[in-house]
Length: 109
Length: 114
Image (cartoon, rainbow over all chains, first blue to last red; front, side, top):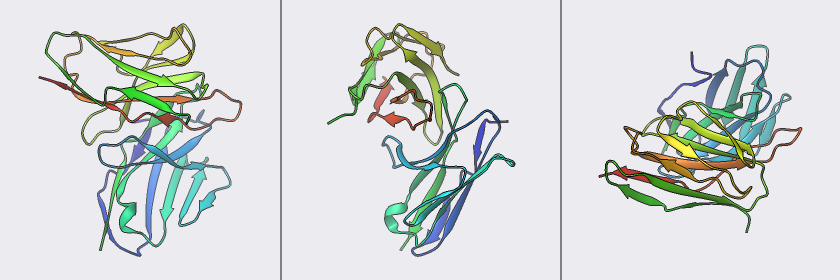
């Protein structure tokens, strides 16, 4: 089983739609969780850190469920510019970052 | 501006050659990392370092070597022993704090074996 698992997609959604990505992690020692966005042929960039209480930044909401070892990202009112690959990341408990394989999102006009 | 600089952006290597990828950061981060990304794949950890003069193997260290002689620099050498080196290489850094923080990435080096 992979340490961090994501549905690879692709998710094709119309502009204005709400889309949710899910991610599970296997290492119960993981303390920090993140969502990164990666555009084609570019480096990953931090989208959101995921806090245990859940956090929101504009159209983006991240949730953490430690009991189920599950992380989610919700994007509301999708824009064409949201098209990218979204990477779920968990720390290993020893300052290593474990990346999921990413979920591709394509927002359609 | 603070950040991570990787060079070169594109690199072509002949089979049997060693090549070194540069990674420099001026963020004063203690930890540095090298990842490899293949098309349609996630990031796989090659090597990481939490302190100068110390580094650890990641999941796919075979055929690679690193050094950490300075806090700011973490070069990666792709040796001829790496059988399939064509990939996108990403260097990252992060502080080591009690509260964990995210990793910051350089722009990557795209290595092609010709």
